[in-house]
Length: 336
Image (cartoon, rainbow, N blue to C red):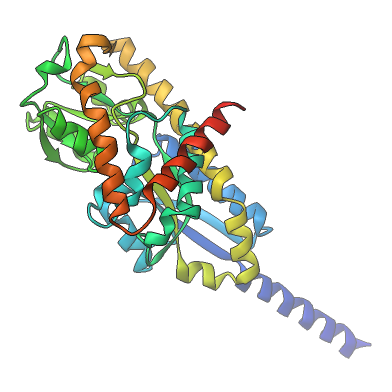
């Protein structure tokens, strides 16, 4: 009897140890302040979905400043973290197909655009293999981009020659088309760049200007219908980490994310945008440019759209087919 009891205890102990060994803690890399929507809303939901899908076998924690914003894909590929979010514009030349979701003239909110981004990637754009070395598990866009300036303007005819921070992508195409000079810095460095007079303004959605305290140095926010551009992101995971959790849990993780989580993330960006615009309106001005005041930008839109389609076709994928998926998906979500 005693031997049986001891054997049972040993089995129980071994089972418990196996369970402990089977648990994996996922390190999530983030690069904007904890109060940003990515860290307040998106990443906690990401971790929750993964913990639920794996029945607690995979947990997660957010860590900051593990690498610069442009280095997030390399961080994941090199094993420095298990998940991260990438702004595609920070890696010019590597990410081209992702510019398609950024073009002005797409109708719908950021939830619709993010879901469309995922569908187009899965159906067409992913064949370009731009995320080689990491595993995309969601795609997203931020709220329509706006122009934030330190000085007041009456129309976009007055922005020529201004020094504007650019993050790349279609944002850079718009900046150049309006005759502004680009200043290349990542988001966390914009306050210092503007405060020191190196830049006269920046393109951003509303939430980011509030979180980075840019309302203190950029009191004028200018909007055009539909936005100047949309910023493209992907949430990626480490191939090695997904292999380490086993096929069943890896499949469960992917199933819990994808299009539905992409739409969730886009909605969070819109919520943050509204919060940021409210902060700007309380101390500065939010100005809508239409008609003659926005004519210079309106004239650029067809050329930007055509140029991006050519760029994406140049990667070997069908840009027009992907754009049709984007438009139809955004229309579908907007009708819900």
